[in-house]
Length: 158
Image (tube, rainbow, N blue to C red):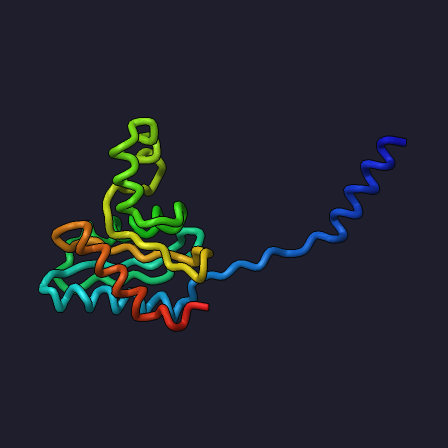
C-alpha cells in the first residue's frame, strides 16, 4: 500500500517535470568579444590571448595576437573557465583565496588559476559564459581587456 502510494507520487512528479532551458553564449558573440578584447590590448602595445567559454567552461572562441606568448593560450582559457564555473571575476576568487587559508583548496581544482583576467558574461543574473585574457603586464590589465570584449557585445546579450 505504501509502495503503491510512493510510486503514484513519483509518476505524478515525473509527468509535471519539464526540460530546463539555459542561455549560453553564441559562437558569433564569442568570436566578436574575443576579437574586441585582443584589439583593445594591441592598441595598448602589448600582445594578449582572449578565450571565451560557454556556461560550462568549454571553449567557444580563442584568439592569440601576433607576438603573444604561447603560454597565454592556456592562461586565458583557465581564467575564463574559473570565472564561468564560479560565476565571478577570477581576480576576486584569487583575492578571496589569498585572504582565507580555509579556501586554499580552491586553487587545487583542475584548470583553476589564481590570477585576475577572467570575467563572467551575464544576462541579468545568469552566467552564460566568460572571457579570460592573458598576456598583459598585470592581471588588472587583462581584466580590463576582458571587460572591453564584453562591452563590445553587451547590447546583444539577452
